[in-house]
Image (cartoon, rainbow, N blue to C red):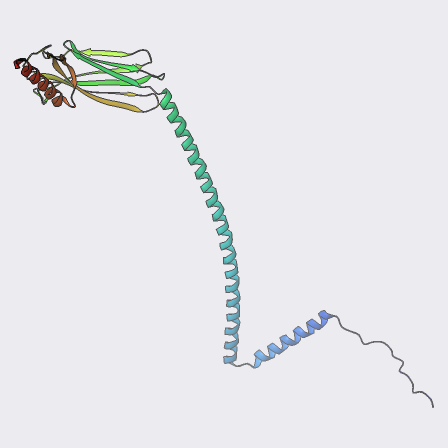
Length: 271
């Protein structure tokens, strides 16, 4: 029995590349959508447009959210770096200021001019003196005094004041300044049992100067001239008078009166 005749064409079917298949698929979908649009109603068309718009809005919103989040993270990081940098700069600046202040205080404390004030009150007048105890010269020193006649013991004014003043451009170390002004009213050197009398002279004054580091130093003073006295007692003698600080003047006078009274009673005692 003879074998059936075998086919003579043995070539395998031709397979099309993927991109060709993709093109045919895309073309078919486009045709289908075009056919669908051609026959769709106005209601379907409105629904399709609304759906597409919703999708695009959602996509745009998502992209905007992602971009905004990224921008926020970047800005937050930059702000943190700026804040940290400003804090470090502020700390360094404050440390520099503190160091400068400390150095200046040390210089002022050891080198700045310091004027030692002295005064004297006697029958010839009122005396003032300024002595610089540090190396830096004092500048613009000024002294102003008011001499006023007053009643005792409260030192209340009895007339107008006489003003005296002096300006010293420079007071150097080891080169003191001195000035004396006469008292325009008569004073009594000594009084006995009627001490201190009814009248005296009070001197109120102020002096100021620059310490060489831009600091203005000023001080005030007040003194009253009291006649001298001598109290004789069995145990010991007491004497005093001359310039007395205005603060506590009344108590000073009362203490002297008490000693005078004690001395008087001692004299009257038979023993």
